[in-house]
Image (cartoon, rainbow, N blue to C red; front, side):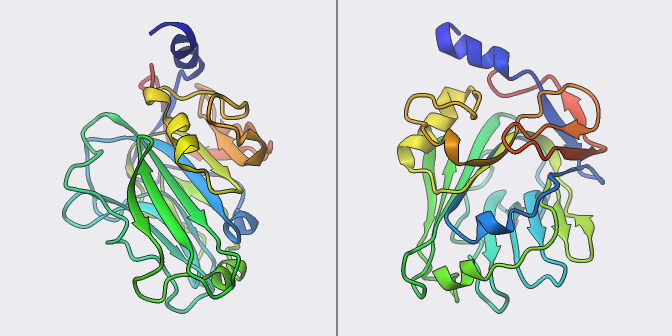
Length: 259
């Protein structure tokens, strides 16, 4: 690599390794306010092991009425997103936002991005898009079941901290811990568009998301950003908000995207 790509590769030195047993990062934030409006979440995954229901990141409220998660599902190595807001049956169905067999679980680094657009009209359905490596792969406009409306999003009630590498289930416990490498987890308080998501992928080389770069111009909308570049210790530095996360049992790896 040369030029900017080489500099980006130097920037990203480590990832976190999760072994599927009690490994997770407590972000020390619920992001409830962010999930009540349009938002984007991005992370990188490297895995050759597939276990159904393992969660890349997620959180539920203490009563398990509302929850949000990105996870593996079913017998065909799907990556799925589910968002249940305002209790009841308002949710995104996993089958709509899924991927083909073995897609993205082959030991290579993959960038997953989820965008959720909140409509202006309260009864309109939200719009969810999932991207793999900068390309839109699944689109849901609220046509399945009682999918979330704008009003549902406004009433989202999540009162626990979001976990990375696990699901922070109701009752304050981790569950569905994942076995994989994870890197560069970030959340924005806006839905990035196609060009901005493609810029995030950056040909497979992560860069500092606190600064705009090319078509990525939403650094000012970052809510939290963990790049897991500390290399040691149990503190995951939030490069945006300064509310550092806590690493529980996960260990650092020099296998990182772009390295």
